[in-house]
Image (tube, one colour):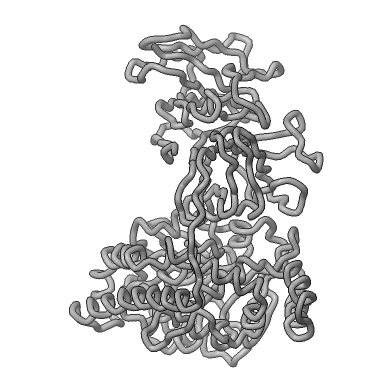
Length: 616
């Protein structure tokens, strides 16, 4: 397996191209405990927020305007209000932030809305984060979380959990199409975004109440994302969710994704999870009547139990879950002990953390016991060998390769570099290191020895062929090919791409990535980089091969936008040397580079060119 390589980005004195990130990567980074400061001119701002919250049931809580500092970055005209129901009576108030409401277009790290959860009744402050972590590891599209210290007018409010808002941004990040109907599901059902219709919810209710047998299965298979739904309830059961669909039908989102026409359940409001006084069985009888009716059908029951079997091998493992708890504990322990609204001794806190670890162990043990009682043989299939990400085109136009629908899209080529047929059941392709189960290959898909498979990265999941639910970012990114149990089969990173130029393994299936003309669904044997004949950029690179220095020289008739960017990349796409310059003649010191093949990327304005050279 090739190593996961992250591109190095230097601070440079010109405005040069930098790699794009997934929306929210900074805000929801678990690498640090963040700091959020609410600033307002009113000295009693917190009490004003609490008074605003005391509105009749069904009336929207109004927003107030404030300033917000997120990890030192000041944002003006920010909307803020209290959120929640019973948690609002707590001295440590929960908050909802909308950066866009009073300042249209304003966002932080691509995020417009997020929540600050006060973790009422959680004397570890980890249960919400742990619950969403388990959901996402299972491949369920769920909100991201991070920890933060919160201040209101410089008064410390304690430790909070940042929780991603389920909104249009969320849908855009995790679904092929964000124009579908999003419902808030519970005692009061409401349309949050998309077409104002309850037809999709009513269709599910009709299938549940009026159909049975084969007709029930046939209707459900074309209406509901079955695999995601069964996983959703498996995790609901495992984390002992109470104020959620498994007990009272509350607190989740439902999204109708229009391209496939399927409905997905999205977890939400997991405050009451992972407590010791609940013990849901593996096969529960929840308030949601659709789920137990599905489990009465052998087809769905077997699918559900097979998902549980697989989870026992990589997720429902005490050591794995304890490791995550220990990571969180190391981050937040001292901060939480200083929380002015949670008066807990260090000894009591450590006991609560130990209890949370014990709950994880007991849940894993209970699920394994119940699977054994059901005589489930949880055998693992041998993983495929030889699967590799062989070639990508991340910037395509009408001069490229057309997909089966006659459209020109980015694509990823998977190659079976082995003598055995490889099953892609349980394999995933992702462009997001924080959500590695972004798109699943069809269960029945197999790849013959030394054969190629094209995956179109265009979100057109309803079209013929294999279409991933995400697009490639031509400015740079990463790709991951992995198994259900999180074994990484392959990965690669790439930098800024040129239109219709591929990054391909040369030699085929084994070598480093080099830019070249595409060899669509065939062996990568081309080594020269294609150069567009119509380019306005005229330049030379010499000597080639080189030893200590190379010289880039612009032709006198070439008009370039100044300054222009020069990046030297190795075969895996890692940026080794980066310059911005306004000089038409520029010498680059390469004496420290090992011998081998490299690529010089030249970017001027909207045009980018690549040229290969050898270092000896």
